[in-house]
Length: 262
Image (tube, rainbow, N blue to C red; front, top):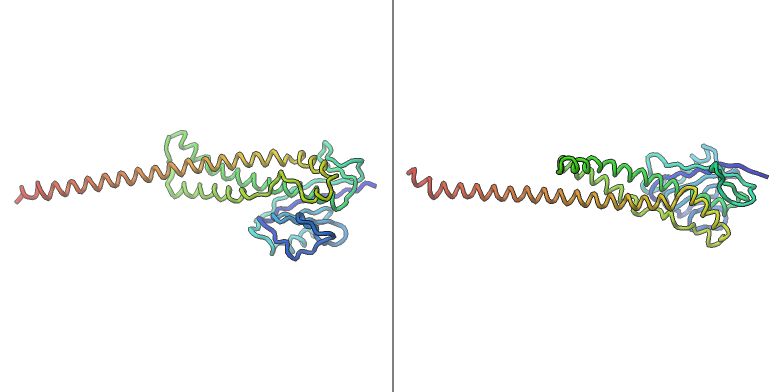
């Protein structure tokens, strides 16, 4: 008999404390299967995500409310990723319409789907952070290309670089999207399902794209900081030359002009 449920991943924050969570069945290192009322299934991840299968909005809100005090760096608005899950298929996979078809809704299969959904939500959040960082740096780079110099004030440039470095630091220690979920150690027969889900949500490709953006932000900020330091050094040199010039003028006045006026 075919059963259809909606899987919904919510990225809630940067970290989730697992200790003392009500667990369902045998404990997993990650994700943790949460003990929930009958009718829906939920998994929680250490890196701040929770995934629901077949839960109503009220049920989701109740679980999120329970998890929120355990979050580090909670997001103002959770990042969401959803997919339709249908059981009763001859083999696990994803059809052309993007529907995940499973043989059954066993916890192990749902845990593999939850892992892919949660990683997709985390990658979406990181993509948004890095896109914003690149948008902030783009006017600086455009001004350098157009005018050949830094046209903004040092404080404004530091602020732009600070935003970029903050985004970079928040995504450097990100979830390893290319890593297989730990449950596959106990259920190697689900590796094919994991591979198909990773292909569907392009987890490896998106992770590689994030690495390239991180490198670009690092190179750009390093270049701009070098120019700022160069501008400061030039300003210091000008100040030194001006002071030497003033000293020369005073010396000339003291030993040449002043005696002539007496």
